[in-house]
Length: 163
Image (cartoon, rainbow, N blue to C red; front, side, top):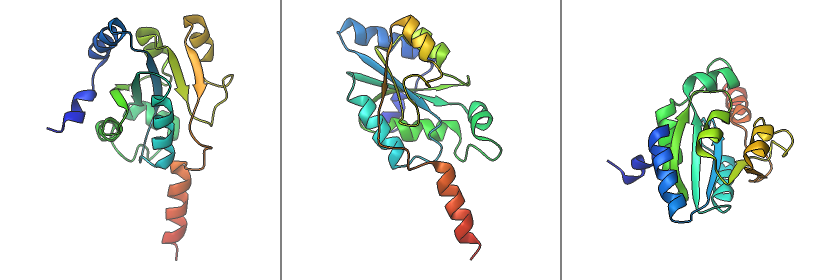
């Protein structure tokens, strides 16, 4: 079994790891997303998030919440495969799959130092912004401009299939 698979954990194991990291003085950043068909924008977002703290935790939307957020036909890849792809990236300390539409319950449980979101957000438009402020979790917008949307890639593939 590849060692990066050990990074994929449930909430209880994540909480235990976070407690151990904090005992060593490590800081934690939480990033989240669907990560359906991993692309350069995802990698740049996660690399930038990893630079903000000692440990990067990535929360991957479960299949049901991805379908609710992205629509019919999504996700393309099942949650376990998406979690494995994210776990294989350098700089990722842990990956967990979450079923909720927002990462608020995980923010409450993990209480990271920083919540990183991609450039399709502003600090004010982050769905969890009010909760993050209440928990004293800093919000950072990271990554390159959003020019890598999976839906745009699918539209391009569909358009090219017509010829």
